[in-house]
Every structure is written in structure tokens, then in C-alpha cells.
Image (cartoon, rainbow, N blue to C red):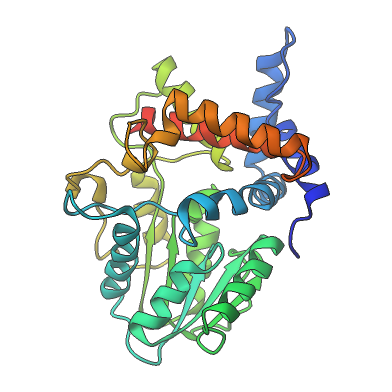
Length: 323
């Protein structure tokens, strides 16, 4: 169910401990490497992701609404929210979703994209998320937004879904399958549940050909992105293509959408003196930190909120640096 005030501190501390983030001893590097290896295991990554989304979901909603993903800005005057919705509809068109289709959203968050899909395409969407908190929140939002008949959300592992073989008209994942390194398992599951001829489409986080594994600064940035975003690791883009083909898919299209956008995908996180960007400036972060810290002290924010904020501020810095 929903994460209680008293549980936030425990969840964020456990998440940080999984990365040995606060270890400053002589063997800190060794412990961090051991943590990294543990987090890439199936059980370790699932535990990490559950802890991560138990504490960040409310923060994500306050800053991003019910869509926890980026969106390609096709025009400079397009808002971030509009770009997110267009990003989702673009995916649905590529999948040839039709009225009445039954579709699955793997790693659905609080089901913002699922509701947009269901409304726009007049289809039925079942979302799967490993986070019990997100399930409870998604059900609540479905009721508020009158989407209970077209959107369903279940708690579970997107590598072992409840769907029958060859039963769905489409499957998609939006910046979600990056939470596992076992691409064959998650893509294989999508292949299993799809009807013959139906499409699977996803947006994925990957390292591009610009990443140099021998560059210490590149390694630091990628490690920081992983640690502050609940990721067990990152893979080169060709691993995604190869994995899709290996499980049986015909690869219809694969591209870097960031190259098609005149506005950087990370623009919403950039520090600038504007309404949306101020909070990411040094002054804006100081103001937010003092506010959240004060609210936590007087009991209006859950214990641990400040630590969550610090992790998310770091995430923004690493993502902008990664570009």
C-alpha cells in the first residue's frame, strides 16, 4: 500500500545502504563495487527498485505529474508536459494501437501513460509495477480520473507477468526496462504475451557511442546516474537491438530520438532562472533544501525527506552531465 511517513526514512536509508553511499573508509571503493554487483543481481535489483520508488514516487509526482519520463521536444515552444504526452501517443501510433485493443504497460509507474493511451486510443491498458505504493496510488488516480473501466494496475515483476500466451494486442515500456540488466528476460516476456504480428515498443536508457569506458569522468557520470535513479547498470544501445532479435522479435525501427529534438531531452532538469528551471539553480536548491528541512523538523514532511531530495538533486546533475 501507500508508504507511510514513518517508513520514508527507513526506505531511503536502506536504498543508500545498498550502494554503500555513505561509506568513507579506506575500503570504500571495494564496498561500493560489492554493492554494485549485488544490485545487478535479480533479487538485489528488485529490492533496490522497490525501495527507490517507495520514497521517490511522491517527489516525482510533485515535479512531473503522473508521467515519470522525459519527452522529445519537437518544437522550442512546446511545454514539457505536452512533449511527454506526444512522446506516448507517438509510441502508440508506431504500435498501430486500435480501439478496443488490450495492451500492457511494463513498469507503469502511477499509470499516467496508461491513462493517456486508454483515452486517446480507446483501448484497455493493464499496467504492471513492482511497487506496491505505485499500485495503490495508480488505483486512486484511476478512480479520480474516471479510468477504472479502461485502466487496471497490478503489482508484479515485468519479467513474470500474469498475462496468457499470445493474448495481447500490444506491449510497451517507457523508460522502465532500464531497471533490469536481464534484457532477454523482459523482452522475452513481452514476446510471449503478444499475439502474432502485434508490436512491442519501448523507450530505453542506454549509453551511446560517445561513452568511453576508459574515461574516468564518463564512468563517474554513468555510475552517478545509476545510483540516483535506481538502475542496476546501463548497456550500450546495440545490446537492446540484439536482445530483441534474440528473443524472436523482428526489429522494425531503432533510433536515438534525442538526435531529432531541437531541445535537449534533459532541459527540464537544467539550472536556469526561469519558472521551471529556478529550482535547479544553486539558489533554488538552497531554498528547496531549507524548506524541506524545515518541514521535516516540524513534522509536516516525513523523516528522510531531505535525504530523498538530495538524491534527486544529484540525479539531475548527473543526467545533465551525461547529456
